[in-house]
Image 1: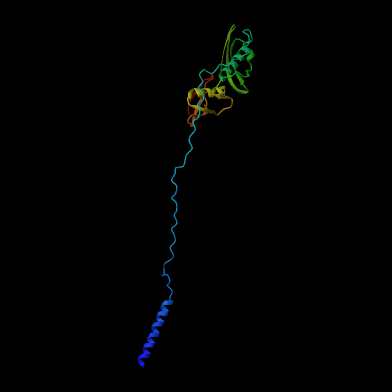
Image 2 (image 1 turned 120 degrees about the horizontal axis):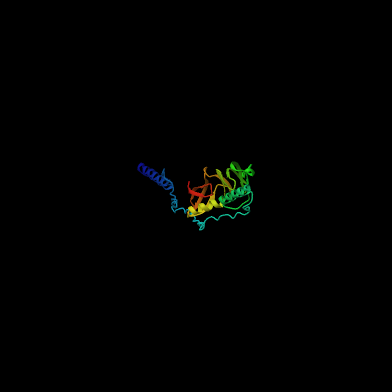
Amino acid sequence: MKLSRVSAVLGLSALAVLVLSSCSDSKPEAGTSPSTPASSTPPPSSAPIPTASTPTLTALPTPSKPWPTPKVTGEPENDAPLADRITFAIAKQAQIAAGKAATTTVKCPGIDKVETAGKHELTCTVTYAGKPYTGTLTVDAKQYSASYKFTSESVAIVKPKVVDAVLRTVADAAKVTCTMDDVAVVKHSGAPIACDVTTTANAVQPYKAQVSGNGQVLVAKA
């Protein structure tokens, strides 16, 4: 009878083990997590960035004829007073040098006495288109004739004449900008007029314009 009780106890123990085993839940292992799909990032674009093209400008025409000589009116008669003939000659030369006919006055204090035989030296003020400059008048008067000479360190000139000279020098100029007024008085032995030339390739190049005493314009690279 004792043997039967032991068998019954063992049978109950086995049943309990089976019940416990069937009720256990499976848990995820430590350190593991649910897998997630990897996100994909598109590669950076390597397309070249377009650049703006340099515009090509149109060249200004090169002057084909010499700068025109201004027509100066108001010349006095041959028998007019010597003072009138001299002042007109100075005014005429000033307008020719400037490159354009314009209102010009010449004031030389004491010029009314130049008909007296002998040498005379006077200081004169020439005003061309409202721009004044001074010079020296020397007169050598004789009984029946007289000679004179007018000299000045300055000369008047108009802007278009300077631009014209630049265009004759620079063949591919598309634009010319000179640092001067429409009418300027410059010293022919002083600093030249500064000009910037924009070429047909859209490049800016500096030039200088030197004006001589008779109004000739010499252009060179600065």
